[in-house]
Length: 525
Image (cartoon, rainbow, N blue to C red; front, side):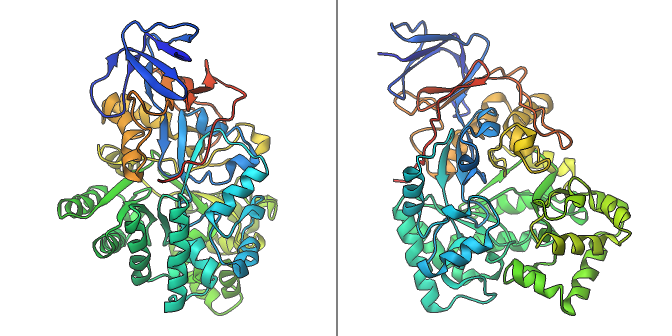
């Protein structure tokens, strides 16, 4: 018996193979039939003539770990056609930690959801279930290496002792057995920046044991990208764990034009046997905390240590670094303050150049002032890439596409400032650019946001349209699908997404979200 029949559409099955005309039937949460002229009562029939029927899009790099706790609709992702998100990225997750470190982790987190920080993945999911919280997209959770490290030895800027590493290995193994999908690294952030490669290899061996993967925000995404890539290759070679380069970029104006070099670096490693994969996003701006513009040594030990350094003679060294990095008006205009979380409202929605003029300070001093006034909690957008490099990365057929964003509501009043448009438009934008620029066929583009991310993560029951697999589906018009979110007005729905099914039930129908909240934690088995 069929529950739904999608009739008259074009199947783009996620494999990269040529699209074909067929009906698709859904029953009991699965794809139960694909073929011409399907008919069965009492199935609900949706006429999808002229539309593409694709696997639900998989966001391989998401920060939606707790978005559903704020708004269960997960609007900005669902309206893009996203049905599953790989969260716990850049070394940050809501678990794990030793019981005696729990209070420290909660105190270090400024989010409204910090009360849900847990000692284990199982405890986190249990607390969500007990609170009867719902979500609209599926979550595949990673163990954040930074959280794991802080949860054992705090934010100390030092190598882990042998005993501490044993404890980290134990907590990681426990959470992988509980269904986590791997270990994410945030080596450009504290406390991940303090870890040496020996620590990462030891943890990688545990990940390899359970066939997980290691996505990484590398130590450097600019001048020293080749060295950072080499570190990732070493982790794979010496641990056996599959490694993944997250939001690959050529960051900083001194590196504009280096995308071909960086791509060749990865290709040579792959050809030599390194198990390394890549994801990118279709924007020239990144988004992070304001201390991401600081020298890496200055953020070691945590935000509190960074703030303390600003009270010592080290302030002058940090100031000199920032003075060099922000020497022109163009440099200042490239760093935009999204939100100071009500700590310094005058700075909200302004770039560093504009704010420096208002404060009558140098741009370096303006950054230090914002950092101190906000306790290093300001969220920024950094225009740090050029379009030619982004286009070159996007043209690589074996690179997956991820948002590096989180699920947010479309209501501006429900947000803090104007977040990066990638939260609202990544996947329609990628498909529009593929159509307009011709760097990928529709079939190849869909593979890069369905089967490819599923394969990288190890997800086997969805990501492809095939009889017997879970019916996570996105139905859209390939001729018009497009993003509308901009930096000035990110709160705009994309166009062209007609229907989204999660586990065989309609999450979005005729372009409007239903009342069903169908997401779940997907566990690695």
